[in-house]
Length: 135
Length: 140
Image 1 (cartoon, rainbow over the protein chains, first blue to last red):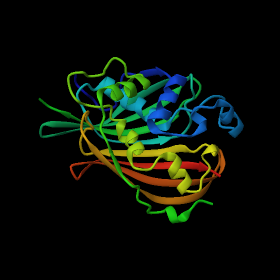
Image 2 (cartoon, rainbow over the protein chains, first blue to last red):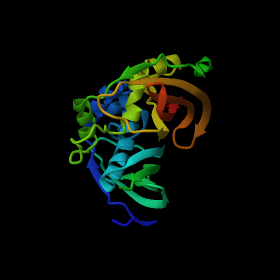
Image 3 (cartoon, rainbow over the protein chains, first blue to last red):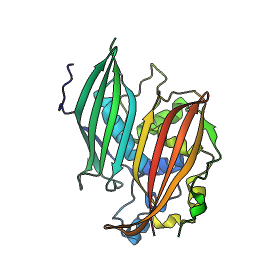
Image 4 (cartoon, chains in turn green, red):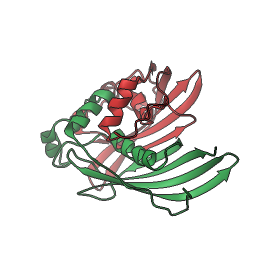
């Protein structure tokens, strides 16, 4: 497939389950109650349901890249988290190719990606650099 | 008021190995169900951040060190990750980290906040392969 600057990536979708938040709290050994106790989230005024872990949001963006590029190497990913993903949210990751550079036996691609949910756009903005090896 | 003496604190350090089962658990919990590649040893690259839990200090201990009450609901504000090579299965990685800075700001959304920045590095055979810089927002 020929890659072009400004080319849109295929959208990646996922529904966030509370059981996944429990898994991530265990994996990260994270005691933060906002991931496990929705009454605490309401009490703090942060929203209506348990808040997803930030690293899981970043994993969704990586999954979008993996869906679009089968054999790639992630070189960097910078993420600005602007809002919260909640348990039960349907999230989408959209992206675009920002730049393409060919050097020797590799193609270096710059990507811009956005995470949004069914209730809010612009939850996270990410910039990623990936490398494709030309065989 | 956070513990300003925590600036430049170096995490004790530890190590980790990603097995196939844990990699699949992480992949499934993020909705990556169909593209788990069973033909190679690539892990989900989000282990670049999971490495924090193998840095020798837990998040709970980190918040205690900072004199921050975790029940106030800390949140990840920014996270920049750079890779020198892929994170693989069945490979022993060392992890180290350090608190870079502590700041205080006023947020339009949630009022007074403290901001802590720290870096976590993954090391393979004395070579840094991943560096992740975290910015955590700590409501006052």
